[in-house]
Amino acid sequence: MKIYNKLNGKCLCGKVAWEMTGPYEFFGMCQCSRCRKVTGTAFASNLFVRSENFFWASGEDNVNEYLMDPPNTFGNSFCKNCGSRVPRFSSGRGAMMVPIGSTMDSPEIEPTLVCLGDHTDWFTDLEKLLR
Image (cartoon, rainbow, N blue to C red; front, side, top):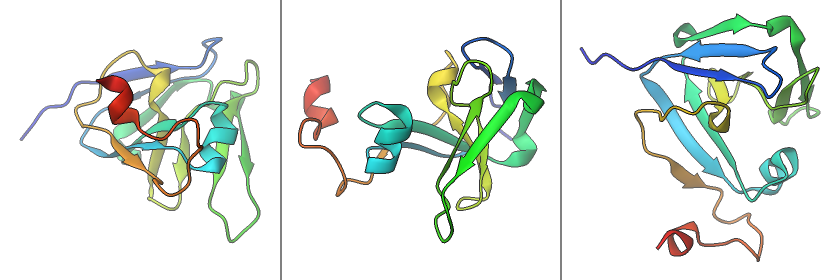
């Protein structure tokens, strides 16, 4: 049985903190219009982990959440103090969705670029930019 490293994350002000271990379900880098709006960047980088492998270390009561009206399952969780994105339960995947930029550690899973059909004209080919 593989032993996974523990990853730690926290918001910008440090009031909300969490820990998680693998196996990780999915590591997605999404460039859809909703992910761009919620992050203010070209794409969101989210790691999905089973709920039983996720633990709030502190500040769970300092988390606020915005959910779009049904039938959408899109939402955003953030620290009430500093506004940083923090993990939230993703009903679409049945797992915790963790903004991977909130940890300095590397997960033991490779990212997948998703939503190729919904992207900006100014940011289209990450592979080309990395060469």
